[in-house]
Length: 421
Image: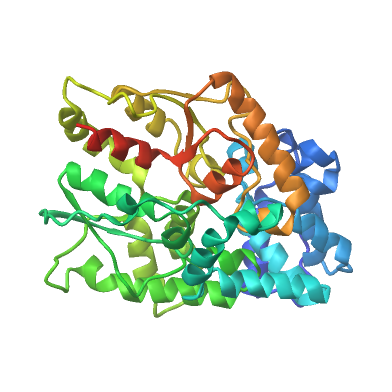
């Protein structure tokens, strides 16, 4: 697709990057078939092809309106369209640029500005944990809209961390909301890796991966989060401490994994961080990527006895968009959990579609988010599972708000199985 950049975008990093991405687009429309918002709304401008057309207009100097902003806001950034696209259009990067340019030209209503500020500052604040603890104590008194965002308190086991040392070490990103909302995901990850002979290290200086601010159009704030994490991780990446060098940076929230694997791209123009960012990105691994290596040790640990009677055996698996489309990782969780004795299946239809969580999307676009959630839960019903498992805290909490079936991270179920032997 030919783009004639307006003078104000010629020579800028955003303009050149967007032009290079748009050049790949042939406007074929295959992406509309797998776009969740297009399926619901049926509006060409609420699908990837229409949004690309809108962004092209912006880059060519056309008037930018509130309507343009709304269509870009409705995008989930699920990147299903990237999986479908035969031309390899990097839509996720393009929509980040488009949103940023539109944000600079269209002022949002005061209520929207306040909500977005509260999300980007509140979710990443040290006060989020205490606030969540209060919310959990009074959960029964909360209105339904807030109760859907507050998980029930975790058990005491959620804070039990393994104490053994191992020659093999990995660094784990704890996440900004996960330690307060679902701490058992992190401790279960450490226990499972410990059972396979891998020690999990954490850097207290790290925090949000940068995705929250980036996707709320605070580009500089997102980059600052990334730089802070790189600084916090670098001594363990380089082996400059008594704990030695880590072999990987592990993420158990697939949304964070997409962001960390993209650090090299995001900081490519920063001479002080570009090389470090590429190094960090090359070490980033989703937890599922470790399964081929650790599964034999876990199977040996389970032994002939296999899964205990209290462990949910039949699982419905929802692969997050950030895993199957953002990181292009498919099949690993099902393959290895099945080999360990679980009966695990995806939804027989629409397994590739987003559940509607999409980071802060379920707060900013609740009607679309809950319609997508309900569609996803209906598609999972035929599996007739004892539990639904996923790989991203946002998907887990969003789906749990619409079903009595337990929704958990797959590593929690695996940890429970290992703890029963």
